[in-house]
Image (spheres, protein in one colour):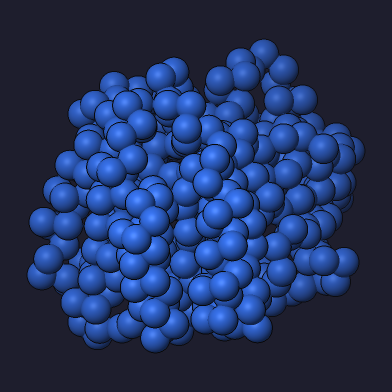
Length: 356
Ligand code: PMV
């Protein structure tokens, strides 16, 4: 896809209000390492979630000033501390949505998951905001196709946070060029499309909240450290190969292979953190305790349960919906004691963003 296709035109400002809900996502093939700006070093694949969402409404008000301006409210409170991240986002996308100048935006955002749960909300937040922007662009230039609407929403979201590109559609999305999928792109994420095995459409993700503190090393810093990581080049090749293998597993439903690839990806992500310079560790003793218990339970019960991790200490427990009852009992008896305040969130694979 040509970058120029994403450049819109200027237009006379109009008063416009819209609201969108966008989901969080959990990567199975991890994106860790990028080039300017937000071009991934390897392709990634994620499950779109269902209950962990951000709801955002934007009131676009024509303003007398030539300059663009905004107020950001989070959970009903004006939060200027979020402005630097949003200013960077708007600077990154202004070139592609020149009609934004001459507006004052009132942005109101809420998360369904508890604030400071250690769950990154930038993916769902940037995706929801990008969809609101695209809704106005679609109103200003109504000839846009639905496919382009979602593609450009993903393109804009990527410029806010790379993984946000995967928070527009569902149930499984892929971001980054790869040889298996001809329509894949580094600029936006695509949906898995036809052939996804039925089992993955209702896959469960129970998020075990091991540590609810903000991460000690941000993901932008972590991506940056991949530039000097001596294992980086091999890691990028490994991720591409793992993606190829996982793509066929997502069709066949071979859960044994699924588990091997997903856990390998999670542990390799954290191995990259431990081998960066300076090195850092985001997992906690309870993360390891839970992993050991998952492995024992899997061996003794012969159930296809596995884990993945994002850039933090929390565990995403993945399993087919058919085993929900037995696995919930296991979580309550064996894993809950290792979660901070015994907290976990039940989620599952979802269909993607929606207009409210
Ligand atoms: O989108 P970012 O810059 O926050 O990076 C996300 C990195 C991981 O969550 C660790 C992996 C991924 O692919 O989502």
